[in-house]
Image (cartoon, rainbow over all chains, first blue to last red):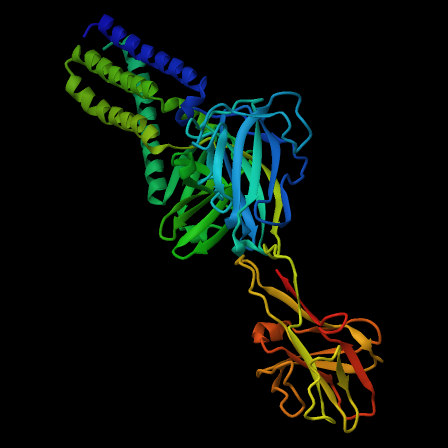
Length: 197
Length: 383
């Protein structure tokens, strides 16, 4: 092999190295390259409840209902998916409470927490229960953890939440007409959890 | 061979030996790590900063889940992140049958992962952290870089062979250089295979807590029902065969030789149709027409039939002391007996009212009968 041939082979090898460097740079420029790039950034959520519970039923009779709206805002820098879940304690009333969660926005100036004045649901019928509804079932069947959590929103989701993105959730509970519920109680924590995509 | 060509050749020989030594050392280190149950991982996120940061190379040791304690940093496959390998700190752990349950969280996260592992499985526990080395490893293990390094090794080997052919010693040179080249190639190929990746795993939660729901103690909305007596009279131990069914008063007396006892019966209504309703209370009320107070009266459940127009001292019905109710007599206000238990037991034959201690020197107390101004009544409350 001539000296020129050797130089040609070396040039090809160098081209490969440079191409590799360029590919690496391109990989780092996109969040889709998770498996091959170092991820830096933040995932953060905020809400407007100031630590106050949004729902309450006391000495409730069948048909009693309470409705509240909460605004959840994504403040992280990495695109994330959000799931809804929650934990329940009490003496079993969750089996007799119907829960409906509707995603939407305020059409005008945001009212004070937990008012739903000017609430407007998303146009999409996510789960076949009406515009904007992301969960419609008993409180007992509401997912307990992230693994089983309700992807926000389904079935269109998972949506990638980006920094500054904000959604309003209208949460409604209604007591079923079932004598077995009498005297029972439940305490619920509603959780929105974001994980980077 | 002149001195002007021998110098570079010796330098090439020394470089080749160094590369070979480096490659063999790398392969040896990898082999020992794997034999000892360790695995090198490149860290791709800062969710555990500053304990473990982006670009670090960490060495994890395979351990049984039961040996993992709260505070340990472990690598596990997170099914909520498509099974990717995640390295986070254990915040809770407990046994669930043959599985070990964990709650883990990245130090910068406020969201946790809940997962479990078979007790016989193995988890990676953080053993050693080498800062920043992961960045180099990330770059070196790219496929184009790997191919490029292999190309350079091949070219070096070919170049040596070409140079040697000129001196008719190619075979000898190849036999000397080939092992070093193969070791270097093996090292280059082994790097992307041996170096695992632990992934970016940031999370955050917001929660609205303490939403409290309390159902009423009863869903029954049936109104209280008041019934008045359908039969009432009294019997007198002094006039044992006299019937007083038509009197406008019923008497209760504790006098030696003349005790009086009142008999009162109510038409008990059917329970409410609402299945959530049950009897919560039954109160027998007598309105005094002449009473002195200061005595305790008893209401006993009658267990046999009797008639308002036929009842006398001699044929007064039998009673039971089970669930006996007592109430103080009053000069002017209504006397109320709690006869709930008696109604539940079945008080279709009514009640017998008597002084709790008979045959004492005490006068007669009278209460209005249904023929009088204020009927005896029974107030039934449901809940």
